[in-house]
Image 1 (cartoon, helix red, strand yellow):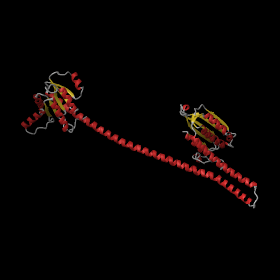
Image 2 (cartoon, helix red, strand yellow; image 1 turned 60 degrees about the vertical axis):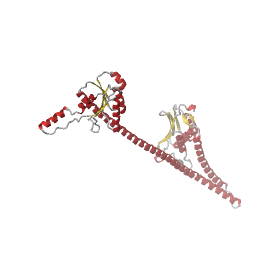
Image 3 (cartoon, helix red, strand yellow; image 1 turned 45 degrees about the vertical axis):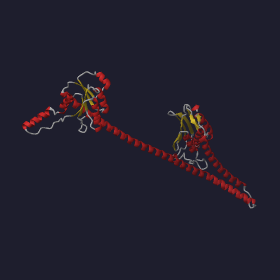
Image 4 (cartoon, one colour; image 1 turned 30 degrees about the vertical axis):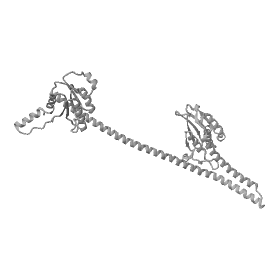
Length: 446
């Protein structure tokens, strides 16, 4: 580190001693120009020329004759903004406070002040002095009579030390100020980030609401479309029968029983389709509010296979139920999910060669259970994979299905905190994977 700059240089020294002669000695030592400057001046007088400026301009020395006076001078200097860098303090200064007490009070006024205690007597041992003053880097001991060069060296070294200490303090103040500024900037950035996160959360809530409204709109439009077609058939059939009955009542036409029977059949088909749609919606709403409990997946899969046996037809069914842990959910809802997937698998393999459906249940990574329903049927076209879970979307012929089965399966699994995925290759079959969260350890006590 380089020496102190002129802005931090401080050559102010305070001498606190009750002996007037000591003050004169310190002034002679510290204020007089050094010997080299006197020789330069003599050389200039004898041989002509101008004396070179001294590199050492000396020190500014002030005097105090008692400890209280010294404390007052240090206090005043601090108030003026012109602190002392060094104080030479005598140990014995009767009748006032001694040098040790003076040093303590000086440091209360200026904690950076360098202090040299001067004494020709052993009033205090080093242990006693450190017990009162503590071990301090600001304290030195000088025995009387002292050497002039020693005093001057002490003055140079300790004022330099004071300057370096002040530089360190200023650097620490600068660092503290910078840290405060950075902290303030960080706090502002955190506030901005928190506000952005709050705004994003609000936007996400609005987006979810918009998505729900969009889904509700699609569902409503699909429901209206699906019900409108069979309802139109029913209304047309009932209108035809009414007109026929009115003509017959007037005696203008006889009733054709075969034609009326056919019209009634069309009306019944339309009514049955509406009934299926309504039942699907009732099932979905009932499952959504059903209380959850511990569910044994193997038992649920057995029931689902039994219920889907008719639609599976002649397909070879492969069961691979490993020792999977129970899940926490809706038994009726999960049975509906797997029955729907098995019915779709039976439909996909119908009419194929060597039809085969596999149901595999196993524990995956900790906390999850995986169930796969595989078939080697016709598969799903790539352009349809992204829409198979949409309400009312179906690849079956008109009147065969409502298009709500997979949508209901997706809603049930998502509502239980799980996920459902599908892989399919046209002509080779499909695999539906249902991922469900494992029941917590204390689920039985809930």
